[in-house]
Image (cartoon, rainbow, N blue to C red; front, side, top):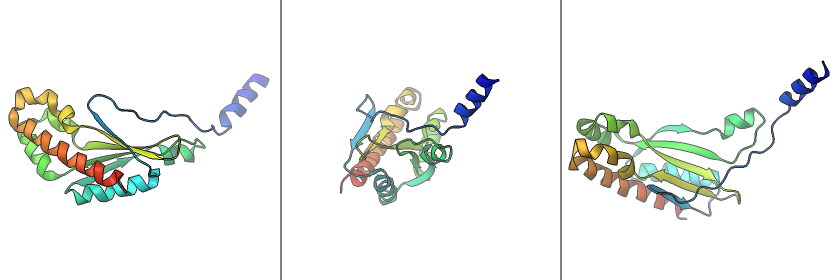
Length: 158
């Protein structure tokens, strides 16, 4: 009986802060470390998306839900970004390629309180479909690479 009560007590205690590692550069990704805090980078990213003719179509992050469970984790937000012009254009070229729409921007809080904006480059995401869809898909991916680079540059630079 004592073991059961001890286990129940342990399971009812809030969990402590969880360690996560800062994102580092990796193949096919663009990783933009900043001196901005998490909330500021999220806000600036939203503005940069709109300034570059795109739209936020999804937002998800575990930070708030974890806090509601008594778990502290660093800021973490995935922001899905796209626009209908690209959606129609890419869908016309490759139905399977649309699995990668929206393109996801990933804002993460670093151990030192700064934040990083990362994403997998659209050309990397769409590359597996170029063989069947042709050069037009490659062209669309290159255009998206430029747009996402501009979003990141605008958001990450003070």
